[in-house]
Image: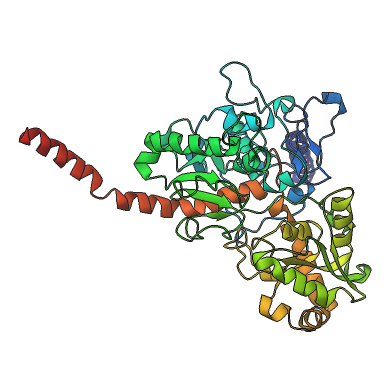
Length: 501
């Protein structure tokens, strides 16, 4: 056979071999990725609350439930500088197209934060919602949505982060569960970075502050008293002086009776408006976002500059005390302006729906100090892609070590805001391209403020755990510093006492 005839035959053989190999390889890849592109129906059955944060509704048949797209997570890229990378034991995490993370189990040694949670009796948490488990059952089965009681509705929801954080920890030990491995519950407190106290303090205040029947004190006061006694008796509290404990007290009036005695702990708060600095401060505590009550506007439905006819929007309580007096002053300055909506409003009737529609049709939404520096209105504005205008001198903002609020918010000093003509002159001077840049950024960061279950990378629950982890090293520093002499002195004192006897 000639050399010329051999060459085409070999070339044809190699070409067929390579083609077969590529065909087999592509088939393997198609099988691998097709199985991770959808949220498994068996993992969780979810519904949307107001088409925004994922919320659980009990006693619903599985065939009636549609699994929502977690679009805020899926469509929004996470910058490496904004949120720490999630880690897995293999070092190679796969994220499904809806943000669900594919893993068999979370490895505590690889978690960002290891959390020990007290098994407090149900009266401190889900029992406040009327949940009654079986004998000796402390927690509902979080793998079965029908067994998880829904949080109280209405404005109670804005302070519900205690609920979402507890659910997230309970689910962290469930195999094949689609959630980040940021915070993992450990069963031995000596292995923990922080200790979580699962007391639903905001719900306790909102629903159980009044005295009923023959009660001498309210359920809320009684639970706070029992909690203080419980914590002070724990070895974990004694060992750290409470510095590594996390207590959620998001409602400004929650934990009023216990906060002074438990002030060494890390609080998860809305703001510092009703706390003395020695009890709560930015050095040790976490500012968490309110859960917004209006629906999140999908990115594709968000109206651009030219289609938002209202320049400035505010609807809510106008006559407030303390720092909220400025609302009244601004009302009289702005109420007669043609492109301004400044009106009293509440959640009654269609109040929430009306407010959501108004914000979504406005270029700027006012977030003015009320009885306390913060309010839910800021997060309603973010969910509506309405550029927030913050007028609250004492406000603290969530995740400010990660987010630059000047990219999507305007902040004005109260003294300037009440100058006649100042506010409207400033806002009317912001051109369409400047506003659009802030609007685009709002659409990118909105998922940071979404509470949902199961949690997703970069949502509100995940971000709070990241914020706690940022404080963890300073907590350890403080504990180690106070323990410098305690152990050696204890040993010497013990031997000295034996010798003297």
